[in-house]
Amino acid sequence: MPYKFAFDLSRIPRFFFTEIAKVGYQASVHKKVGKTAQEIIKKFKIDEATGLNLSDAVIVIQDLIDMQARNIREREKFMQTKKRALFLPHCSRKYMDNRCNATFDPNIPSYVCAHCSPDCLINKATTLAKKKGYDVYILPGGSCVPKILSNKRYEGVVGVACGEEIRLGGEITQQMDVVGQAVPLIKNGCANTIFNIETLIKIL
Ligand code: SF4
Ligand code: SF4
Image (tube, rainbow, N blue to C red; front, side, top):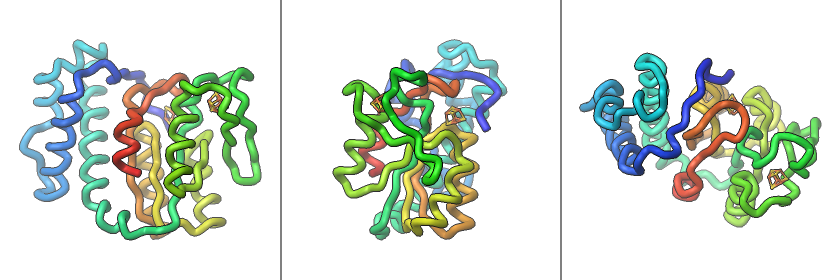
């Protein structure tokens, strides 16, 4: 399920994400945060910079904080896992039409990247993760996750998606006793979406 609004944080200064990381850490340790989502929005003028109204901006920022807090809480357990998978969102492919040479295998279910575009985020992420020993899946939606996890029995998964899908994926991994780490989309919209490749590298 996507958010009901579009946002783009890809041009927000990097120290905004450092602040989110700091507040996420506080949330993971103390369960309550020193700074609220509203304070962060005000400090970085997120509503002005993105055109989001305040309540939508609060949802996005709160989800980022919650995601960060959960990553920190699960990190130690995740580091002990051996059999891992990376779930990427199909919406971050460079092309969403037939210029994308990926094939879709409904039996998995996943797209399989054909590496047609060197500057495609999905191509870069797939290559990086495979080198680190991950199985990589490019998913049309979070509903594919249970089937893959039932078939393959991964110990740890990294999921890249928007906040709503990450929340859904988090519930599934918890139910299936799989340790999860998340990387948020910083631009949503279900096409031409963006995640930070440096953030992904750190998480992997
Ligand atoms: S590099 Fe892979 S995911 Fe990206 S457009 Fe080409 S086939 Fe599709
Ligand atoms: S992960 Fe991408 S395609 Fe899926 S709901 Fe979020 S923005 Fe849309």
